[in-house]
Amino acid sequence: MKKLFTTTFLLSAALSSAAHSYPKDFSGPFVMGSLGGNYASVGASAFTAGGAPLPSGTTTNNGGGISGGIAGGYLHKISKSFPLHIGGKLGTTLSSASGSEKTSGMMGGNSTTAKHKFSSPHALQGAALIGYPITNTIMPFVLIGWENALWKHKVTTDMAGTGTAKSSKRQNALLVGAGAIKKVSQNASVGMMYEGSFHFDEQKSKGGGVTAKHKGAQNHKFMTVVMWTFK
Image 1 (cartoon, one colour):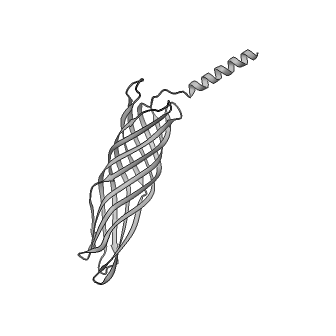
Image 2 (spheres, one colour):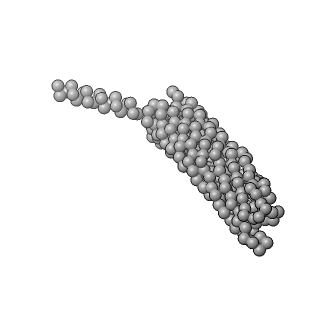
Image 3 (cartoon, one colour):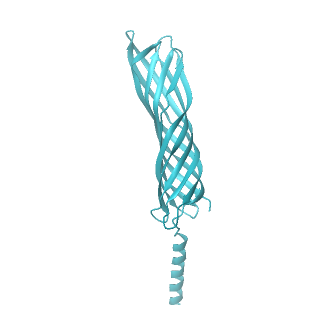
């Protein structure tokens, strides 16, 4: 009886170990969902009101919010002996990131204040992925690609006779990122991911006698990810 219990225990342990011992293989088509926080900024905005530039009117505007997204893609494993994974993903993100900043300066002997608000609610992404498993269940990865994001700006001043300048424009950006995922089943993985987008386009807001030029926009996302690989 003792021998039978011992054999049963060893067999159960072996089966349990086998069930949780996955190969170093994250390859195949996948879908990925993400949710987390993000930090966005506009590097510089130059303001003009009533046809004259606002002294000290260049300012940096920062803000944050919640970001989430969904993507699909494919990963290919080079070989069993060299399990480097290469592939890519296409997806979209939604964000509540927004910021508000004021700057003041003297114009015609009067102090004038400009208020700038921005938001970046939506983006499309495409990126190449490279990952290398460090254990049977954990794979760090990096990504590089492109992002096309919608940026909205609104500028008002307290100068008499001026109104509101607005703009809404999709901007292209360099997208970079890194993260790591861990297998929790044959198909499912969870992990963490950082993505940063760096926009090079200049955006101009105009209206009501107010003009503003915005450049240097960035968006940094820190997210929890869930991935399902189809085997």
